[in-house]
Structure formats: C-alpha cells, structure tokens
Length: 145
Ligand SMILES: Nc1ncnc2c1ncn2[C@@H]1O[C@H](COP(=O)(O)OP(=O)(O)OP(=O)(O)O)[C@@H](O)[C@H]1O
Ligand SMILES: [Mg+2]
View 1 (cartoon, protein in one colour):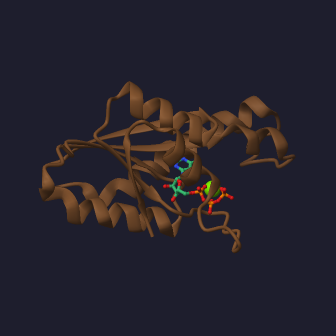
View 2 (cartoon, rainbow, N blue to C red; view 1 turned 45 degrees about the vertical axis):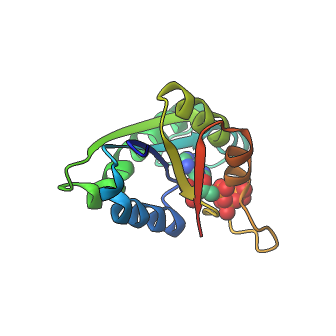
C-alpha cells in the first residue's frame, strides 16, 4: 500500500521533518522514495536577481536546476543504506502542478510533504503548494506538521 512514496522538497526545515517521517515509516512496506524538487518558474520570471553569475532567464534556470540536482542528493543522504530505492527528480514549472502530474505519471502510493515550506506567511494554516496538492491530487497526501 505504501510501496512508492513521492517526497517533494523545497529544502526547508519542514521538508527535513518529512524526510525523518519517511525514515520512521520505512518498515511499513516502503520500497521506493522519489525525491522531487520543482524549480519555481514564476520566481525565476518575476525576479530580477542575478543568480550565481547568471544574467538571463535561461541561464538562471539552468543554474537553478544544477544547484537543485546537488541539493536534492544532499537532502536525501539520510535515506541511504536503508534498503530503499531512491530516485531524484528536478522539474521546472509550478510546484503544485508538477507534483500532482508526477504523482499520477509515476503512480505513487502516497505523497508526503510539509504543511508549510519556506515562505512562512504566519496567518495561513497551509502553504499554497500543500493546499493545492492535497486538493487536486487523486493520490493519498500526508501533510507533516
Ligand atoms: N518548489 C517545491 N518543490 C518541491 N516541493 C515543494 C516546493 N515548494 C513546496 N514544496 C512542498 O510543499 C510543502 C509546503 O510548502 P508550501 O509552499 O505549501 O508552503 P509555504 O512555502 O509556507 O507557503 P507559500 O509558498 O504558499 O508562500 C513543503 O514542505 C514541500 O514539501
Ligand atoms: Mg512555498
């Protein structure tokens, strides 16, 4: 029932909590964990930042992907040596849409994600990604508080 888990991460402390949760749940039949990060295209489009020496949108996107490829492996390090198959996915787009689409494509058993992430807007109970994924996905979604 829990064989394939999708673990979307924005590398926040909340995501680390989710990772620790998956570690604790590992002997509940989890065979594979797909760790995923979405480079938020809206942030790249809206920001005028020069990221890591990159100046145009294409270059900022490429460098953001490269950074995420490294970060995602570092993030998932604690899952190693537990007999789980770990795969990594970095996508570009809207975090919510990409998470929902990937969960369908990979036919995961469950999505495990934080109820909040990086952009802590105090007045909101749920972050927008968590809220939209739990509403739109046909898959089971576990929000870790
Ligand atoms: N870019 C992303 N890629 C992968 N997973 C993400 C991404 N952004 C958020 N998540 C997942 O969603 C969870 C909740 O984050 P969310 O973005 O909903 O909250 P927030 O950052 O506090 O609020 P908001 O972004 O709406 O201002 C995170 O803990 C993480 O699991
Ligand atoms: Mg967020």
